[in-house]
View (cartoon, each protein chain N blue to C red):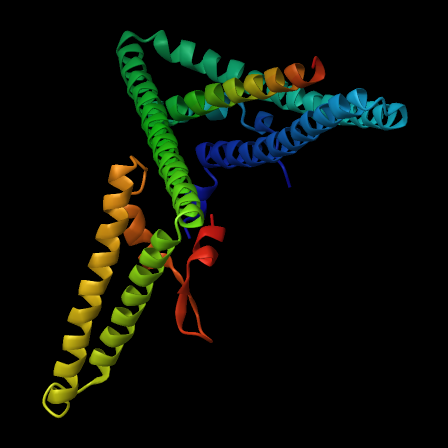
Amino acid sequence: MDLEKLNTSYEIAKRNLESKKRIIENKEKDIKEKIDDITIAQGQKVVAQRQNDVSKLKELEKEIELKKQQIEKFKKSIEEIKEEVEMFQERIDKVVEEIKENPEMKQHIEQVLAKRYTRDIRDINKNKKEIERKIEEEKKKREETEKKIESIETIQKMIKEHPSMKNHLQGMLNANHRIKIANDKLTKLDSIKDKSEIDKIKESIKEEEKRLNKNKDAILLYASKKKLKITKEILEDIMKNSVVDKKTNSVKIRRYIKKY
Amino acid sequence: MEEKLSIITEEELKQMSIEEIADIKVETENMIHRLNDIIDMCNEALNS
């Protein structure tokens, strides 16, 4: 380890700044927690006011007051850190001004500072874009889930009102389940030794696929006639995520719906 | 143990390179901005 490098004034200053940053981060986290507590207590206060619960109201007011006192303490220590950092900043600015007295050095330091500020702005913009992307992603996910829930509710209503549609759905899911089992079996068989068994299974898969498509088409046709929001994609999703009852080896529609 | 920033004297700052001084200056400025934001957040909560 290069002890000399670690102990230069610059390294010491950087270490001290890093340690300040950590202290600030922790204090900010604590402050945010207290603010959240106040927000919750204020919400509870509204409920207590509506219910005319005087003792609860007093208790909550006391709690809010206590949290505010704690925030006040944190604020004071943050102000103390600020004072210390500002004093250090003044010292740096004084040195920077002295450097600028030399025209050549002035140009150099201004260039370096401009470069550093640009880098900081670039980092901020990068972070901003990343946050925007995440928000957009979350929004898309939420919209997809809402659409899914809407489709599932439509399916739920449809199978309740039309037993024949329930039969089609159950038929589709059972066929899909049997295809999955057959495909699993195929992976365990030897292509030469078990050829006749493989051919038999493949034939049964074809039959199940026909059954699956017949039931799926019947549902989609009905949905299209009645202008229901049931898509091919949601049916595929139900098949992919359907719940199988191990005892009866059949697919449980209601258990899938309950997941949402 | 936390060390005060004041242990870095003016003389020591003068011995730093331009790049080092610029780096510390910007970092210190950013820290002050952040501290101001936190103080604003506290004031908002205290006045709510």
